[in-house]
Length: 309
Image (cartoon, rainbow, N blue to C red; front, side, top):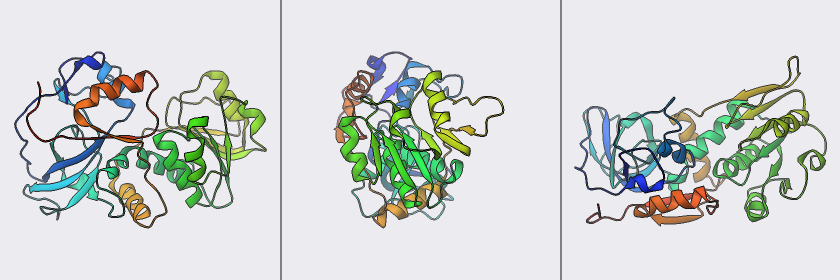
């Protein structure tokens, strides 16, 4: 699924291209599934060109779950038949090449297709919880935007760290967020956050875009010495504030991904997939996301056979 120009969802085209060949240090993966990430809307529209501007045309898809079918020289110990996952560009396809050192063994406790939901959202949540917030047992954390793909992982990882979790979620996501272990759920559509949170928190994981007024509310909820970690836009704190603010972009870290896989296989972290759709429907998924009709994580499964160009 490629784009030849930036624009609305109609620029996404299904095309037949030659099967890629892995180079030195690479593997060829037969894709079981990729997944949809909202950031791809900005990529498709050209809004990310300042930080990410691949040559056109390019294939969409940023994470993969699949099976190794060919190994280039220096394949980092991988073998044909290995089931792997990773953050890999161009994964919205039947086959994709990847550097062998950027993928890890797929979890065995869940379907391989579902594992495509882990690399981006899961690693973002991991780095927010453990690296930037440094959550430990007994702390209180607010997950702002717990109903999204990153948020659902963040709630589970914060509980794994032993934290008391307050989570914001809409009514349609509240049941899932509660199932993943949140101690308190705030319906942000019905109540002001400042009125709902009982006492200061040690950390806030901000996973949604907030305006200046909302950001100020978040900062006021954090105890002195605490931190606001934002995976979206920066959250400003007043000069001299005892509260720190960190804005980060998750890096591709196979160590974090492998650790997350171990928690999935142990049953500590569950992978929530809202729907599986054919890869050929990727443009429709983009339209649904832009109109607010997407809830939860969507995986996309290639359909082998002749493509319609």
